[in-house]
Image 1 (cartoon, rainbow, N blue to C red):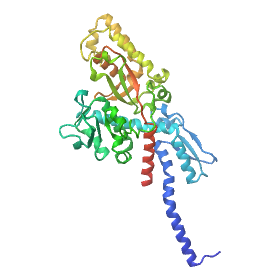
Image 2: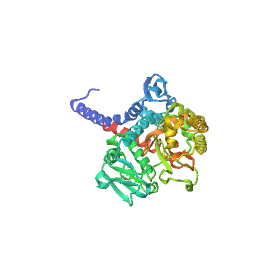
Image 3: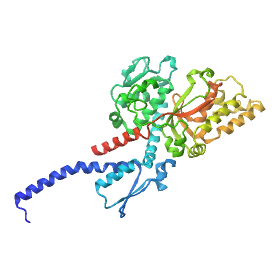
Image 4: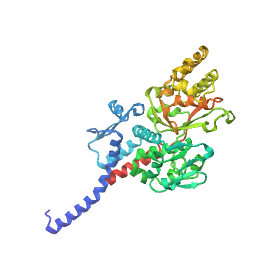
Length: 412
């Protein structure tokens, strides 16, 4: 059949219309695959009729490069697949555990960057509870991008841009106790993970509320409020230890007194709230071997019992003996006490004490062993235990991150 001139014009117009409709669909169809590549998946064409997904075990690797070198995160895509089929496949793979482990590499980088920026700000100080939970200095909260929704420093939310509000903790003069410090570290991690532009648009002001933990439950807080979504509970890190070292990245928790509060001497150090910034391979293997933190709670108690045999009054005595390993102080101990010290050294030689890295406000990033030694000084009448707290890093936050990346791809 031959087309006349008018028929050809009509056909051309229809082709233009169809192409115009196809452009956004194709752009959208390619974005899930693009996000897979951003996560580090190695995509390969295949002559097979079905895809081959080799997730591997990236959560046990030190880095994305190591995971790729070990053959993890490989996806063979049939050449015969249409754009729609490729997108459906990518959407499926994005929800697999290997993708969440690949995302955990980015999460760990974000937690380390955020904690480094927070600890480098000498203007971000610690305050005791009786002074209020959060203080923004003489000019007040609004001058640093926050607005109050609870009295006595118990609740604030960003006033304008989320990233500008977080700058108060990166470079402003602010004070808080360590519970708020943990919240700030978590939110700062999200900022580094998403990037400023997406962080400003992906979260509402209410979702970034900070304050007392009880206050957060009555807000839209992305951490603990109505918008937190699915929360993962693994207090003693049993399941996290099984998953591997990258599953710990950015996880929040606390070190808290094991005995009743009546045994506390320093109430301002009754607990240390933390965010995990790194775990070595040896520490991760030890945690997996011992099924999480219960074994280390017992070791903490053993350390506390041994500490009772080393009397002294210096406020930083165990910090100096066990963490700084002050040669003069160690040599001055009587021989029987040096034998006790050797036993404490042997316990603290475990890689979990040396290579499980925690950010705590205002101590910065230090290994678990430092905090245990420090708490022996502050509260010598009780041992301490370690807990992870509820978090949504691999559920709600991961899904938000995926959505933000797909939106950025479609817009670009």
